Length: 139
Image (cartoon, rainbow, N blue to C red; front, side):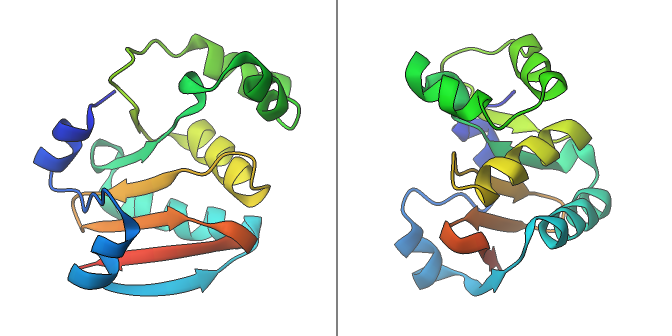
C-alpha cells in the first residue's frame, strides 16, 4: 500500500481535482462496458507491470452502512479478499492484482464506489466516472 505522496514520487499522474487534468494533461473520455474495461485495464497492467500499477480504493473509509451496500454486489471471494487486506488509514493506494482489478471495475461500473487507476511506467491515469466512462489522462 502507498500513500498519495508515495504514489506521486513513483511518477503517477495524480490529480487533486479533475480540473487539473483538463488543464495540464492530454485527456480523452472513453465509454466502456465492464468487459471492455477489464480488457483495457489488464493491457495497461501487463504493459506497466504490477509494480507500476495502482488504484485508489476508499472502501476502508466508508461507514458500515456504505460497506454493506458495496458488499451486496460482491461475491464471497471478493469480500474475503477485501477483508484480508491490511492497511493504515493514510494508505488508500493499492497495488493492482487480478482480483482487485475485477473488484474495482465492478464497483466503478455499477457506480457503487469510484476508483482511479494509476500506471507509472507508461504514465497514465484513468478516472472512473458515471455511465461506464473513464477519463484517461496522459502526458
